[in-house]
Image (cartoon, rainbow, N blue to C red; front, top):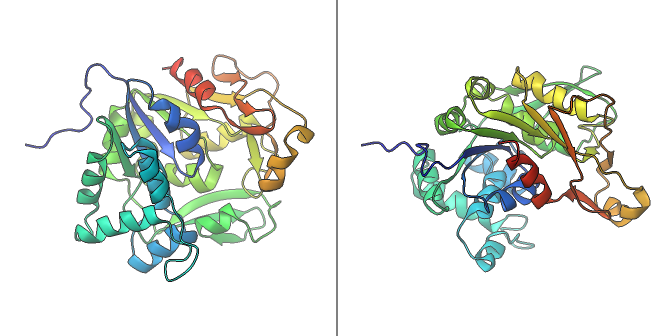
Length: 326
């Protein structure tokens, strides 16, 4: 008899986290897993660059990089095993490839290319109550951005790392050909008590998930609280000059519905205090501006900085703020 993985156990809250990249695992999952809750990640899978993109093209499958990041953060593996699976080859035939991506590829191929079996076995390796699912299992779809000058940019990596003029605004994004939601992702969303979108790159990590057919519909239908975690800094080519309200407006545009809460950082520091950080991350432009007269019942501003010289999310401060809303 089929066992529904989303039946509530021991009155635990069921939290669905939507996104990809490094920000969500490090800033959100790393601390969220310290609470007695069920966690399901619905991951972006349209990456087109790097190890993940190469494997996707060569084996006609979904991208594995963001799934790997979420899986390792929620796994029961000890830190040494996690470090090994995060190893990236620097030479030879596997140069550029991440060992964890190859591990997931081997699992997929060894299970006769069955996504259902792959994610069942993958989730068996996670702490009870945790699940990781792809937003879609459609492997030949690409993320496309339409710029304000009418030019179309194809591929997640070309949006993430722009080769075009990054000052041109993104007017719209879509997936071609269309991709349908993974059924397990839909079930998790419909059963959730809270849905957390972000943090992560606006278009290449978050909105690429929201525009999968059936996904935003499931979020709107769900009775869960919808919480958007706004980025701390703007990113070149994706979110130049956007304010907190602008970020949320973009999310709501593709959600085709309203968020219940927006969590944002309200602590600014001088650029000189994190000059070294800026040197290492030139793609990050400036602090996201805070609009005047934000509805404080919906927009929840806190000091979310890890440190004054390291303007990324403080996991403890971020997750406490979120849990107070659930």
